[in-house]
Image (cartoon, rainbow, N blue to C red; front, side, top):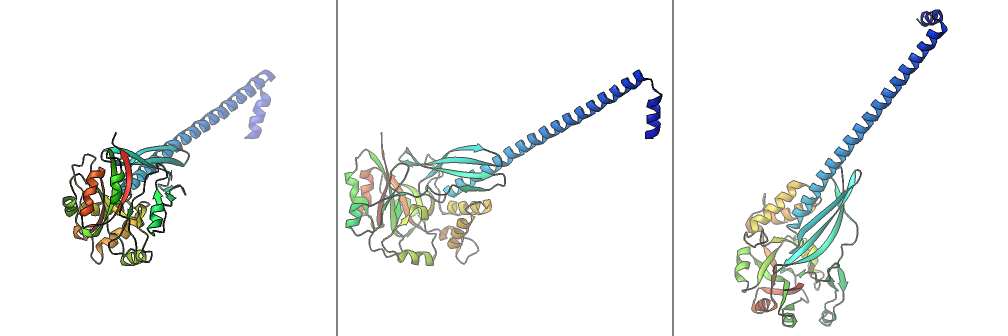
Length: 335
């Protein structure tokens, strides 16, 4: 075939041969240009598809992270709610920052900022470090023989809440109800009340003095071994990062009350989510149900409560026999 084609060219006169070669070159250039354009278009389409897929996967991962954090906040961090959430997507991953806050008698108080990293594989993780509270030695506590530093929120300088388990024999316990008289009457105060024994949510609501409002119920989610461990350090209370419970109300208007069944539902929802806190949910669920197939409302034992009110109203707790310990938390100005 090549010989015949060459022989055909040889039969052409010089001008025809020149024109034919130019035609071949133009055809070749067009073919190359077409292939380049197709390659560029395919590359752009692939890049666009990857960008769309990257955005969709990161959005899914961010939503998963937010739901995981929001759900876990329902059973942890006493009287703390999840607030504003901001994010910045990158290539195959992104960074998000969320803020949390407390509400003390209708007054919002910014509480913390935390960053997370998420990726297209639907995984997220917290930044390492920067979460520990600020520890400051309290001279009055030292005088009373309490050999631990007081914890303060690193972002706003407010006191972190502390709790005392009713089954632990502490050598010393904080009872700061006697300090309420020194607080400006126009302030509004948060306190962690540790009980002498467990009570139902209905009992707690009814036994609090007028003007003292339940904000968060502390639930006994500890194994016998962990309670024994607490007893080995009989002067050290339980920090707010190691307690679990639930908000007294399901809404900011204090209309819909949460109860024992709601707490169980929060745990069950968390287990179904299978997120970063799956281990914690399993530990709490197993602790509540014991040897039963699943926990019931009767298995939810409240051993403390976070309350808010004016200093004068909270003074009404001084005569209550169920108050084993009382620790000041955040204090805000009414105006």
